[in-house]
Amino acid sequence: MRVIRLNGLHLTLDEQEACLTAKAAQALSIPVAGIASLAVIKKALDARRNKPPHFVYAVKISLTDIVALPETLPEGIQLSTLHDEPVIDPSSVGSSGTLSGRPPVVVIGSGPAGLFAAYTLAVKGISVLLLERGRPIEKRVEDVRIFWEKSVLDPQSNVLFGEGGAGTFSDGKLTSRSKNPYSLWVKKILVAMGAQESILADAKPHIGTDSLRQVIIHLRKKLIEMGCAIQFEAQVTDFIIRQDKIAAVVVNDQQEIKADDVILAIGQSADDTYGKLDERGVKMEAKPFAMGLRVEHPQALINSIQYGRWSNHPHLPPAEYFVTATTGGLNRSVYTFCMCPGGQVIGCSALPGFVMTNGMSNSERSGEFANSAVVVNVRVEDFTLEGEPLSGLAFRSHWEREAFLAGGGNYCAPAERLSGFIEQKSSGVVGRTSFLPGVKAAELKEVLPNFVSDALRVGIKQFDKKMPGFISEEAHVIGVETRTSSPVRICRGVDGQSENVRGLYPCGEGAGYAGGIISSALDGIKAAENVIAAINGCQ
Ligand SMILES: Cc1cc2nc3c(=O)[nH]c(=O)nc-3n(C[C@H](O)[C@H](O)[C@H](O)COP(=O)(O)OP(=O)(O)OC[C@H]3O[C@@H](n4cnc5c(N)ncnc54)[C@H](O)[C@@H]3O)c2cc1C
Image 1 (tube, rainbow, N blue to C red):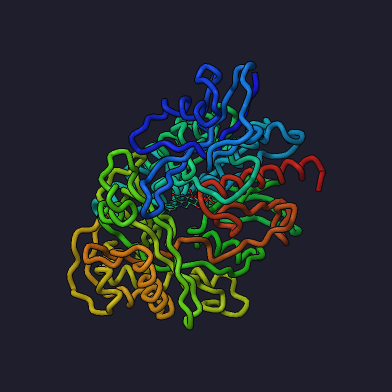
Image 2: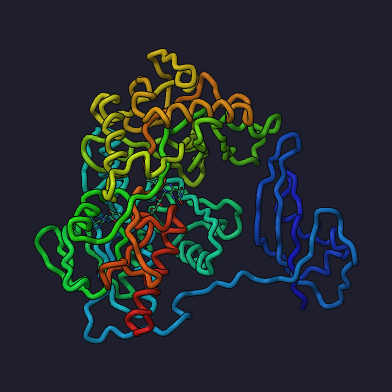
C-alpha cells in the first residue's frame, strides 16, 4: 500500500467531505477504487474577496498497489511525500530523573503553562505539588457568574485566577506560530481530555469556553490519577531563598513548603506575586506590550463585510478578521488581536477597583456579536522608571483604574460608539453590547494614553478601507484592553532557571516568554524538561 499526501483539494460550500475521495481520484486520474482510505490532515477556509468562498484540504491517501499516478496534476493540486507530523511525547525524550531524597517539584499556577509542566513531570513519574490560588473550575464558574451578574468580585477566584488559568473563559483559540515538536502532542492531550477532534486538522483551531471547562476537569482528574497533588485556594505568598537558591515557598502566609525545584507559572496578572519576587531580589525587567480597546460589531455585519454576497450561506462559519495598520508620523503599529467570532466581550477584573476587557466564545461561536481587541504597541520607554522592572504593571493599573471610574465604579465598562470615538464626538449614548456585567457611555479617549487613542483613530480608519463598513454606527468600543502580554519579564538563563535564583523556573505568559494557550503550554513543558535535566545533573 502506498501512502501519499495530496494538497489543494477544494470543496464548495455545498459539498460534503464525503466528496473528497471522488475529487482526489479525479485529481490523480485514477478510479475511486484506487483509493483504499482517505483522511483529512488540514482544512482551511479560503474566503478571499470576490471569489466564492470554499474549503481547501490537505489529505492523506492510501492507494491500492495497482495504481499508477499521472506525471502532471490539475493546477493548484500538489502531491507530496507524506511526512506525518510526529506526535512527540515528552515522556519519550530523555531520562526521567530520580527524586529520591528530593521534595516534590512545586508548580505554581494551574494555567496552560502550569498544567502542562505538571503533566510532563507526572508522565515521567516525577512527583508534583501543584499550587493554585484560585478555586477549582466548578466553583470558579459560579464565582465568575456572580461577578458578571451582580458585579461582586472575588479577588481569588475570577476570570484571571483559578483552575485552568486566564484562558478558561476565552474563545479557546489554539493558534500558535510555534513549530515546536510538542504542539501536536498538546492538542492530542486536549482531544483525549474531551476537546473536539477537529482541532487536529483545522487551520485555525479553537475549543470554546464551554468545551474547555470540561477539558480542564478531565485534565485535573488525569493529573491526580498520575499521582500529582493539587491544592486549590493555595496562594504562594512568599519565596524563601537561601544562598541564591530556592529553599521553600510559603502558602497563604502560613504554611512553609520545602522545595528544591519550583516552576513559576503565575500568568501575567498576579501583581502581588510579582511584587514579592521583586522584594526577594528575583531578577526581572520591563518589557514592551500592547494596549487599546475591544471593538464589537454585529456578527452579521462582519459576515457581510468578509463574505459579501455569500454571507448568509449556512455552511460558512461566523467570519473572522485580522487587520493591521501603520500610523506614519505617530510611529506606532495598530492591529487586531484575539478576535472572537460569535463571542462576547467580558469584564475580567481580578483586583478590586480595576476594569479590563477581553473576549470569549462558546465552541459553536453562535453569539450575535463579533469582537476583537484593537491595540497599539507600548514601548518600555512609554512607562518605565529607571531600574523599576514593575513600572509596566503600575502603568496598566493606572488606565484600568480610569476605566473602572469611567464605567461608574461597579465593574461596568466605559463604552462608546466606534464612530463617536473616531470623530471625537461622543453621543453620550450607547446601543446594545454583549459586555458582562454591563456598560456605561463614556469618552474612551479619557481612559487611554494620548498616544494610544491617537494611533487607534488613525489605524481604525485604515481598517475601514480594508474592511469597508468597519466604522459602522452599530459598532462599539469598550475599554480598556491591557492583557495582551505581560509588561514584565522574569529573566531566565538558557537552562530555564531564574538568572539569579537557582531552582526557580519562570515560565508561561507571566514570565514574559509566551503568550496564548498553546505557547504557554509549550513553555510549561520546556520548564519541566529543564527541571528533569537539572535533576539528572545535565546542566
Ligand atoms: C478572557 C481571555 C481570553 C483569552 N483568549 C485566548 C484565546 O482564545 N487563545 C489563546 O491562545 N489565548 C487566549 N488568552 C490568553 C491565554 O489565556 C494566556 O496566554 C494563557 O492562559 C497564559 O497561560 P499561563 O499558564 O502562562 O498563565 P495563566 O493562564 O494566567 O495561569 C496562571 C495561574 O496562576 C495562578 N497564580 C497566580 N499567582 C499565583 C500564586 N502566587 N500562587 C498560586 N497560584 C497563582 C493564577 O490563579 C492562574 O490560574 C485569553 C486570555 C483571557 C484573559
